[in-house]
Image (tube, rainbow, N blue to C red; front, side, top):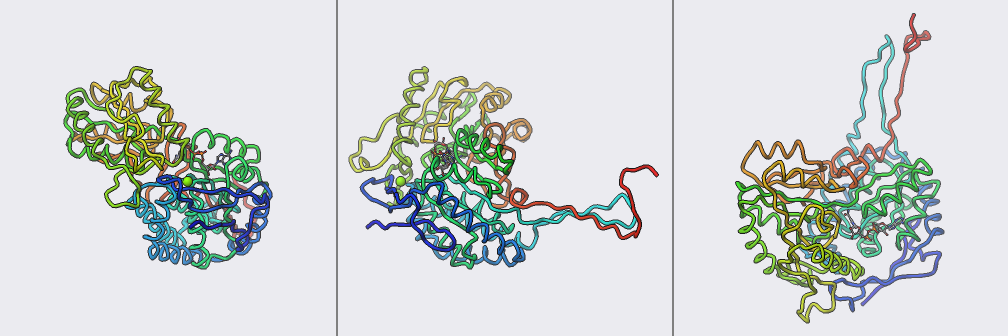
Length: 494
Ligand code: NAI
Ligand code: MG
């Protein structure tokens, strides 16, 4: 049974001004229609911005700890509905239930963190250089934020952006990914139930160029927080630059796991299986390069290939499924394209490289976990983000060579080193160009209260998670109070 869902603008569920809709299907079984959703356009964004303006007026005046209480209730509701949400999210985007439950849990953690931040939102004071004068900075709500999100974490990633924005007193217009609008509807329903005033969040569903782009150029929008591809992120940054809007970008990755000869091999095997094939490789932090030191290379690969072949593909809602489908046809075609590229480049296809023959999987966008060995650093499969279950294995001589290869990509999100040598681990921590380095853990698995983000083409210097994100969503005003009763001139010789 499939339902029709609408946009949320000014607290009302409304049809889009375009009058057009789109159907979203289950990637594990495309005959299963998740729902019909509004295919919105610029007029919808404009209406949403009008509502958000009114929402901002109201919400920005409410004390931050009281705003935090709404997030606390949102966290409670997410907790109550964790299973029901996870089921719908898996139906909508394919990853196994254990992972969609984790996705909701990350939003719960973020909600409770945000609730507590309502009682901090620290700024700072410093002693003035003049007598009888005080200087202090205070944090103020910043305005209306456009939130543009991907489908791979349909609840967690939006929560990283929307919850901090709300605690800071901002209003939100959210354009979720066209592949996960159902999850977005459920998310805003929870915020309304938690007591968020009706104009504070607007949900506008639809496609990037039609519904996302107008948000990035709307004159009332203070800033954009985006997660997705580097190509789209850079376009958004350019649009924001035209109007001096704030912009926070979380984009691509080409994350490597380096395994040195002295590593705990069992641990490293478990790590790379989870890092490379969890979420069908569709995470910005997914392990897409495995760097093996020469001494362990052959043995490691043999064992890894066996274990990759044992992973059970299937509907993420079925017990026993390890790996779900790709998100859509285009994503699966992209993986197949890179298998051809890797083969043409001369890499050695060790396993996978095809659509599974199993008839029970024919209705969905499945692709077999794929491993290439003999990959050279300059090959496209070692350089470009594929966003699927394709792992490139490279051989490295030693720690220095490993770090050099690791850094030789345009991205810098996550990284991982497996070793028992504390010196090697700390050298990697110092020298790997990435926003995240794991020691003896896979490249995936962020915690809500630590900064998250990357360097180089992965981002533009902002971080989500922890408290740095609250800097993005609030303004600092510096207040000087001169209580000397005379004109005191800073920097002027007397
Ligand atoms: P995308 O970057 O096209 O989409 C992300 C979001 O941006 C969606 O909500 C989309 O509607 C919106 N968008 C697209 N074009 C826009 C525009 N011109 N203006 C404003 N908003 C726009 O990512 P997509 O198509 O889902 O995936 C393509 C590739 O992007 C993947 O294969 C992967 O390489 C990368 N990606 C990376 C993610 C990450 O977590 N860093 C998440 C999703 C995708
Ligand atoms: Mg779909």
